[in-house]
Length: 232
Image (spheres, rainbow, N blue to C red):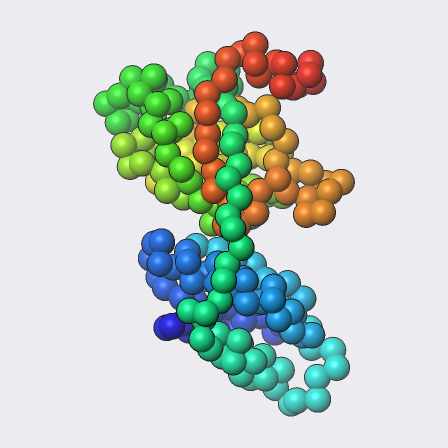
């Protein structure tokens, strides 16, 4: 398995397994996560998976070595031996209901026009795919979701919005995602889910984790209101 190691600050190592998003890179990232979960080295504080990398944050407490970075790199190289034998956890499939368009997804007509489609065709394509959560970041619980069809790809807005309601579904380039909390953002908004993605009182505090498989499905306004239980 080919990879490169880079220092990140004074307490982290970046494991880079490629430079392009691909199923092969995703598989290797998942295997590295599985190996770290299996062995849980004493120096490990946390790991942060992304599209083609895993950032490993380590503790420098208790180190006798003069150079903790070199020591951790040596440990990582040992951990990454025989990776083809590593079994990854079964990927969860999480179904996300979405109320598309209108006030809940005001950019869906832009996405449609940009790609020469109708609103209904955008919804059909967005709900027909199966996606992968590559990483959580930007905001608590924000999933960067890959695997979207290029048929509905759209550029980020030239001027980001200052406030996007929580649970809004967006598109940027070939990615789709969901804003878990109200925040600024520049993605094209196509809908909103009644599901809460940021769960501060649970462990982990996120509905989704890296590696999850995602399927979106369309719901009506009545179903949306029912799922929200009158809470908006």
